[in-house]
Image 1 (spheres, rainbow, N blue to C red):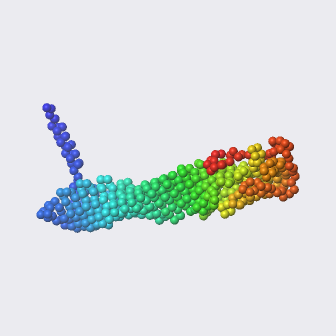
Image 2 (cartoon, rainbow, N blue to C red):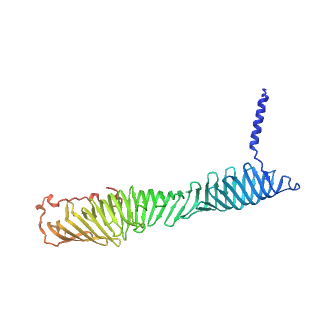
Length: 502
């Protein structure tokens, strides 16, 4: 058997003693008291301390009016004006205290107040773990940090990182808004709150709902996820992810975005959107879709980008649709390069190669203005290079050209069209049994077209026309169409889903 050198034996014993000493908790030391009483018949390890008591454990000082100190178990109970001086920036006060020197855990009762350089926490019962530097409460507490007041039924406060976790009936009250949540984390240094459940943020001019995200209370900015809902003035904004700034109001939404104007009853959808109250605009792009519910129908409109412009009061004054505009409703469809909807006078203007389809009629012009009254189309005006085409048969079309056309509606159906300036017509005349009489070609300065169920039933020339009726054999294929004829039925949206196909 090989024996260790005495030097190494001494080093092993010294190391073991050091480790054993490190594992043993420090003893609670009595620094001072006015009186010290010991009753050996009761317990010789228990000391009764009275008056201006000061005790020290590690680097933490404990103050109170009276205490029972048990040297055997290394713990004590303190009463009246209890004060724990944890560090230069952390103090805890209460009516009474139980402290365990072995676990370094303090239980404080009655008028508990934890004060650090960032916040003040008050409650009736608090547990403070000196090892983890975490304070726990289970019966409700209030934390005041600058202008923010936070309350909840349960929670814990990390005195090292200055973070508080709140659970059950959480309320954060600020002079400008109130936040309510089921679970919330708040950092008193960054003044940021994180949400981990259903949360509402209600201010004087806006309200927010989300189920995940954060809010910086100093700069009034937030980023929210999961079922996000932001209401500001007349607009409501939804999105999977929303960045929102309160002053001045600015929102940025991504994925499944919906902007709803409550006053105009218009929904604008897409996958990316922004709202800027100060600049007076909101826009949605990436599969942008506007939905306008009406009395007996709904209009669906798509464009590359949809803009909502607001006035100084935050009310929508116009909607702008840019690039590749298409819209659909059951009895009216259309397309153009761009479109503007003026809300104050309820007018829609289509720009650059607009096309409107109504039943079997195709209407084109340089630009088109539609006037809405009582949520129904009242009149429609076509400006310059106006052209109406309606199919008569597989290879035959009734056609009307003019400089300006005005369509009059009843119950959202065209009942009359007035054509003014350089009127040209080509019309297939038929018997009641649909037998062809001939093809009428004429020119005039003005005319009126009458429709029933969106079908042309007749027309009247206001001025004497210049024209004739021809047989089919008298006109070749080119002569059966007017100049600038363009039939684009293949691009017509037949369903609301077709508005996304250009």
